[in-house]
Image (cartoon, rainbow, N blue to C red; front, side, top):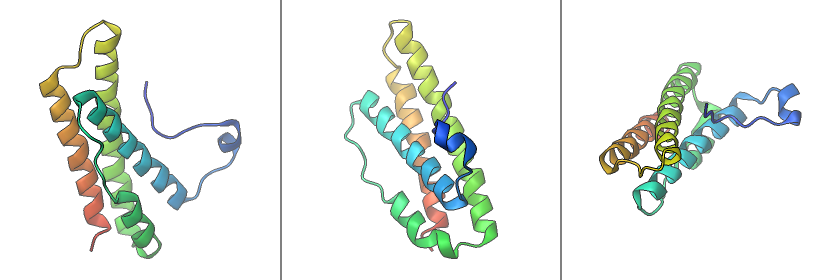
Length: 121
């Protein structure tokens, strides 16, 4: 199963702060986007999601932070499921379906757009 929160012996005992966890989750979703863009044969997108998060997170309300958690969890889960499907196809010796890849790309971008809106106001 693919998941996007890295684990290491050091981080297994230390609990990251909410900001560090938010940055890690957002970076992992953007990394998933880059992987799907590569499979689709597209150039990597130039998004400023982490910069928006860095500027707005300290002043974000608890409600905005909870909303970020829900939206980013949904986006990360969708990206992970899509990447697992692409990997399964690859393992079977098949190319990823171009329409499915385009749809996954669109879904990940929409998830990031949904997150960006929280920190763009």
